Length: 114
Length: 114
Image (cartoon, rainbow over all chains, first blue to last red; front, side, top):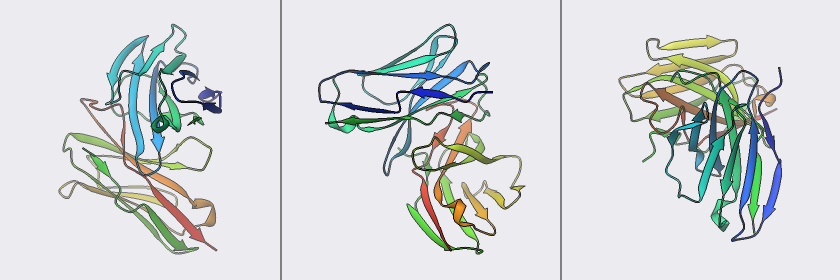
């Protein structure tokens, strides 16, 4: 069974640009969560989608948005990029919406904003 | 506010000795706790978990202890091996799923020296 796939692996953008990151969950998983990892801050929750609906959202500005498609694939978009958006963006999938479920992570997209 | 805290950013241990990684949490509604391991340029991978109805769970060289009264959990690795060198994240989950399916600590970088 293929794992969680994130594309692209690396991105370099400049301030003010926008970026779209893609995530394909494990086959059969319908829940997708996005996290931002920066040094010293751990994994900060961005949002969670299930069946194309956003179930939960973290404390990030409106420049961060996401969506999920009918095949459970998900995208996140960051508009008007700032230097502080440089981070590793991780996507994770799980089967459903139960609280006590493991998350399975992709390898992430490393975003550098210059 | 940081609901899950790992106060030690790094830990260095000699091969063959015990590694103890600590994690504190503030929300008494958390009822499921997990440890993830992360190598550079890879996504976190699940290591071990524990439900709040238990105080200990073992899996090979890895043991997680939960002290609910102190809101503290720890991961013991015995014996430590150089391949265990990675960043370890603790995570917590609660019924209300506030802040995302899993809430992560900042991570502890473990270095096991031969």
